[in-house]
Image 1 (cartoon, rainbow, N blue to C red):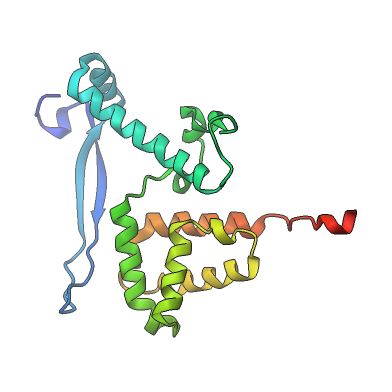
Image 2 (cartoon, rainbow, N blue to C red):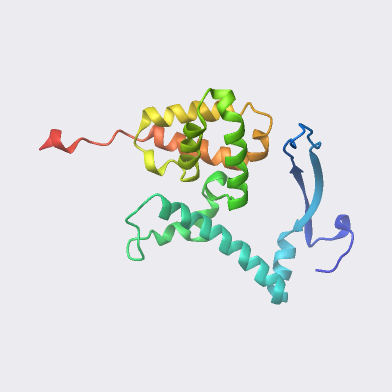
Length: 201
């Protein structure tokens, strides 16, 4: 797409992007930056499809990243998953589009790492936990609770810890991560208790 004024370009829409920053080692924090920036409009996407080449490759890369993110979540939640039993229908574009936004968000490894670093730095003092306890909690967060998804007392405990973290200065930078974790907690906590098969034998 050619470089022309955003206001007169029907190939792009203007959307608001918010950039937040952590405190540095001296306790200084850069002010939040909010910018209105161009993203491809529906007409722009049609033109990308027509143009092909590098523009189309970039669009396909974005689609690939979204599909991989959803697939990774499915694989991470089921140790027995394989090619034969994978729920392929879950990766159809319509199915992904109808998922809650937090469930299909592509959260980069760098973003997870930054969240873990900040959580590890603040939670020992905020929650009175040892670094070892905080580190264990972070391991569970990164795995999105799959290790403890039926352990409701522990899930509730971590839910309380996240609520404390959300009151800390840098938490607003990790809204995508926190929204994903809290939604996953709600799902596991609202799930019915597993049947104890021995009682029915």
